[in-house]
Image (cartoon, rainbow, N blue to C red; front, side):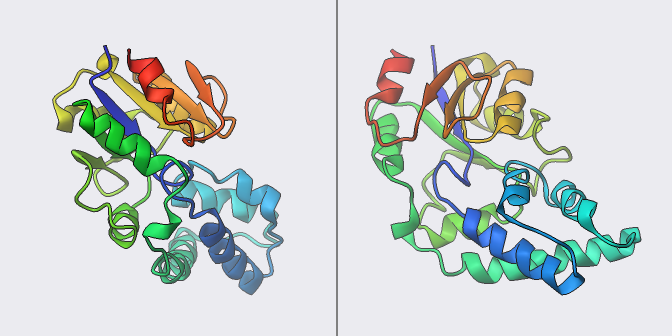
Length: 211
């Protein structure tokens, strides 16, 4: 029986893809590094430093660890400026309806995101007090596809991983759920899940899975 649903944030509850892309693009352009939307697609569900390594694959020169840390911090500053423009209107279609449906039926909800900016994003979209637990990049040591972020979310809720459902839009997140022994729901085409939906606009999707 599903007792809790663990949501990835970006791409599931709200989309900050354009914010990430614009921030990485600005940083890459400043460094003379080729960067496009196809490369940006490879960064979905990946930690900031792992994303930077992908960006630097096209770099004409090598960077020291100190320089890499500075690049990541610069990109994050650009990104934070962009996500401060988010509002509740940016919540993706169907997300609130499904979240409220789960709450109404006594199902616990949590965020499981690798992003350290999760608290800021949730505050901007008005959901900082909504979830029963938030596990994010500020309390984990390993990013997805490691299952740590979801296992910690389940622990915070006091629910066994086998009694949870992960909702993800990235392959790395689906893999993280699988590694953690958690059932998974893929939206937007992430592969390898137990269940699939194009997005959360179908209000009956959780009703079908949980019951």
